[in-house]
Image (cartoon, rainbow, N blue to C red; front, side, top):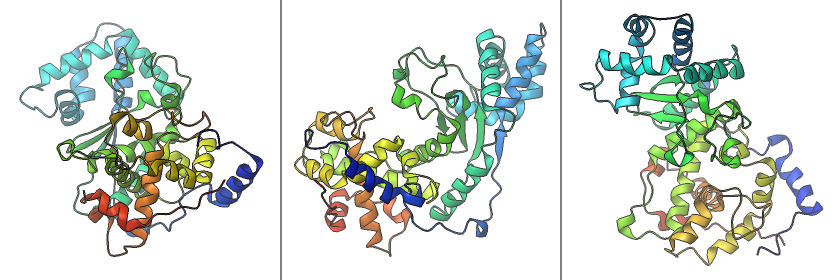
Length: 356
């Protein structure tokens, strides 16, 4: 397959046709957002951190007074964020010291300046996140809407230790704005790959949030059940189905999938051939095979460098879309509760056209 998949004028012409005025979006009809009452609470702790940092710049400060003025309001979030909700540990004195250490550090204050400067005074995530959480309320009416808190933190020495773009607890959804400063920002962990840096932009923020919600809503297949590739593919497809529903039809599919425009066009054009290639591996439990189709990467390793990454996620989404389009009796909430992945695959009867 690797040698047969080439970029061509035929491919480019087809890509223009499929994208057209839809901006390569999924094209399904959106729900009536105006009919869903929601006043999303967004707390800009990053701005309170910046105000506190200004106090530190002017000389010695009373850290207890600073905590009371700028951070006491955010104590429940800081407790969840830093101490995993352990209120008995997160006393006011402990939190005062924790916030003092960051505010008193010149690098922390410089980072706060960078966030404010790069995002600008007009940056406001609330409108787009309100639309996202209205869709969330529509699809998951029994779930509470979290309080959104924007914050700034430092970076770990290596990206392997994790990047905290989004943090979720039972009460809060935290957004680390220090990871949305553009792909060229020089203080990210040095080993953060370029294909991850691409999504470190304000434009990607709603998609990152949607992926985090989908991640905690749809667990990985149970390893004690000896899952095979198709199980992982369908689970990834269900997560992408949730992402799609939260972001709505006007968000381009490339943003939903974290693809470049070229990668999206490649995936759309070669969908059938990619599926045909994956068929032979569907019931493999080989960890390397599963990683090839689902792990984050700049492209799919067994294909060429122009190929889209995470083809298992892309194809899983297409399979789940086909399954749900044929089962109008099922809701998104019903879907995320299912773990019979192979049944979903078989009932979808997904057979995309193969273009040579």
